[in-house]
Length: 98
Image 1 (cartoon, one colour):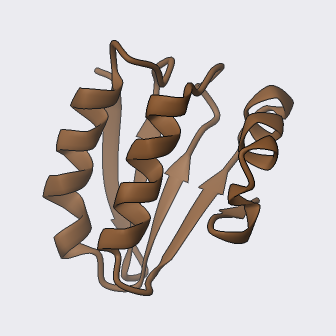
Image 2 (cartoon, one colour):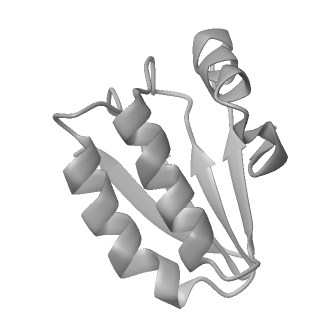
C-alpha cells in the first residue's frame, strides 16, 4: 500500500510510501481530492518514505494547499534532498516543513 491515512487531534495525517513523480502523482492527487474536503484542522504529510519529489508532485501539493482554504499543510520527516527540492521551488513560504 502506498498511502496510510490517519485522523489524530482533528488533523488528517497521510503517510506516503512512494516516489512522488509522474507515475504516482495521479494516485496521490486522487487521494488528496478525497481527503482534503474532510480536513478539520490541518493536513500533515509524512514524507519519511519519500525519496524523491518531481515538479508534478509539487503541483499536486500546491493544488491540495489551495483546496485546504487556509488550513495548514505540514510536511514531516522529509529527507534532505526532498527538503532541498521544496526549498528551491520557493514553496517554503507555502508549506511548513518539520
